[in-house]
Image 1 (cartoon, rainbow, N blue to C red):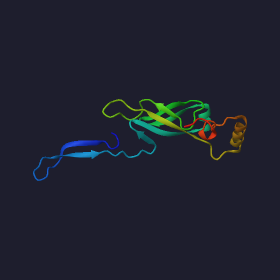
Image 2 (image 1 turned 30 degrees about the horizontal axis):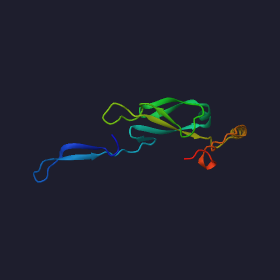
Image 3 (image 1 turned 60 degrees about the vertical axis):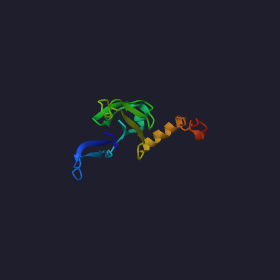
Image 4 (image 1 turned 120 degrees about the horizontal axis):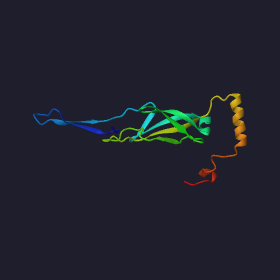
Length: 144
């Protein structure tokens, strides 16, 4: 079912003044899920990962509508990346074909930082000269 989809039940409403029975129209409203969102037949779920998992890659479990699925997080995965789980979405109207599920990666830094983690990140900043904003339009990078 899709949000707003209508179901017609023919002849279910008694007629008025001896007239023929009418049709009952039902409009579907889909309640929000605590962590899945739906766009058509595709399902989305935000998946928090650690900085280390995103940088080094990892095998992580993500919830799917049919249970949990293990996916491979490639090394260097940025926040906002979408990992596609083909065929793990909702059924497409009137068919057995299913949409896809997307695990949307959300990198979560450790909080609060331990002294050791702080030293590590300060060392990383000292040896990593990259600037992820280089290609942003406000830095003179790619334009929109």
